Length: 353
Image (cartoon, rainbow, N blue to C red; front, side, top):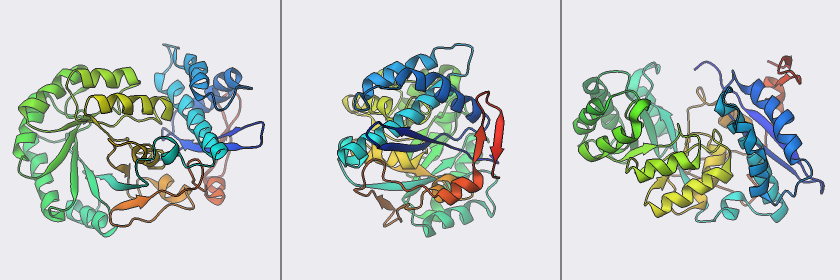
């Protein structure tokens, strides 16, 4: 990963309220996403009641129906508008979204995604950086080597951080079920919090179910699903203990909250794949939430650089403010420095980089 990017979306209401959000990290599709926002989403929702968020969401839904286009383009376009609209709704009611969405708590633990094979200084150095930064835990990458080799790496990570640090293993769909089961058994005594996307995509619901039962390990998945219906099927199949559905990839907070409600009835705990500025509000709002997920500044400069009032970590947790909506102040100097603009045809029109 050499680039990170996001789309800053602003929704202007007739009463002067402006909803603002940033969503997405796919640099090669952002031009197409921005074009869908302007040419497909906006014409369908212009003039609608901003508080009728379910109606607005359904009006935008046809942007996902084109089977000849990458489905994520329409879904992320919806998420851009849906998230900005929720920010506006929070401002209308003068309430933060973590409270408007349920208000279960105002603090949330924070983890980093890490454990990459190319990390400078190796495992010990990376884990030390995470502990020194005050993190609650780390999502640790496995799945590119053999189960035995990655189990040895995971054991080294556990030894480096001790017992009071959450370690998750994320295979990114790297293994077949037998390999994933072997890894789970090899690290059975190393306090693996959960095992994310352990098996390849082609039969993953059944495969994760088998790893869950035969490996005696808690399973997490959901970021690769496109809809609440896909997450429902994971739960019905008995494939997951944790669901890390990504609202910023798959239609926005409106769809994520549907998944969270279903998950509660299945005794499934919710996570959120990256996008901590949105995930923290969603996870703090519900009783079955886990932790917000981001990365070291070198891997996620958006979270660390775009938010001017990013909260400090305290005991591995961040505290969300009572500012209305998402409550984030975007650093306009950061935006101007890295801004890329496209014309109506999706061609690069200007860049500050």
